[in-house]
Image (cartoon, rainbow over all chains, first blue to last red; front, side):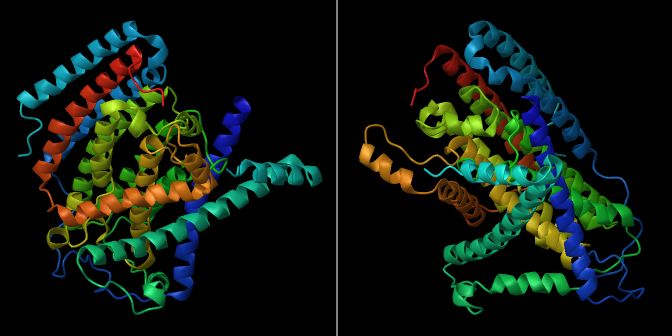
Length: 122
Length: 360
């Protein structure tokens, strides 16, 4: 069991390195065979063609933040449900009622957010 | 059906016989990495071509035909063009983060790619938490996209990245819940376990109505997750130029392009794994002759065929539905797919606990 996990972890690390090597090697090839030149005009932000006004690392719509918080809540819930789902077959009705209650409380939370208008894009 | 683990085991024994174990492991890792790299690039190139063909077919166009037979050489021209174009160094970007972003996007997609069940005994990473590991790693891609948008220091990339982030994290929930529904039915999270559990019948057939609902939810969420089809508002070209990768040029842009196509394959592969039996051939109970013929087709062809079929459906969406607005996109997820998905999960749990599902 432990041996298998170590083996898989090694392979996962291999995959990570593979991805990084892919990016690095392709960039290296592009550096070697592609042209390189630099002018002040070329280094400007492209955006849509006309000169950019001001800095763009500015404030953004708060709605995105709201959805990120909601996501966090429900994503953690999914993490909690995974172990239960794996053995749901053997646990039977007691666990079903427990998880049903847990989901009911969460859905109440979703309903509250809905009622408050958090799910509406403004 | 041919079992690939015979080959890998023979190769492993061969290596361990002539050299110390650490060296054998290193060589094996290098070979696995090289194969992954090969599979990744070849599939990405195939997918770019495949999408062009399917799009041309839907629009009654002839598509790319000029370069090589049926335009197959066009893609090589594209790759070479991408490689020899200049990587423009912008002076207003956050340089470090700007260069880091493609690493996140590509590494996330390569690792999930390595988890897919390619065929019998042909699979790189096989954790016992399989599908959970996949969701965990694939959410790293969002970090890369947000970094790309933020570090570019341009308004369009910023808006594109924010939209993309909101969209991907929202629809990730639905993907997670659809996965949970299937994990509930199968009773295992490991990729091999999921495929083995579908030996007597694919989950979409044996899982009653909840499996079908979960499949529909998964396909919609996967389309949104890959920023495609009607959900392509992060890179809506007439609003945002090109979305989060507007400021990337040459091969830097190519990485996002590559990952986008490969992500299409990956979500199709996961759909195949969860609902369409992974590499398991189609068996119909009682039809022994038919089943025997199906067993002759290699498992890797089964997997690729099913994944390409699911991708076909996802590309089809693109030409059938108009682009959604951001409020519609969020409403679809939070008001429809998520509550339906949660209800569906409870339904599946009830069916599984009561033993109402088909034994297959």
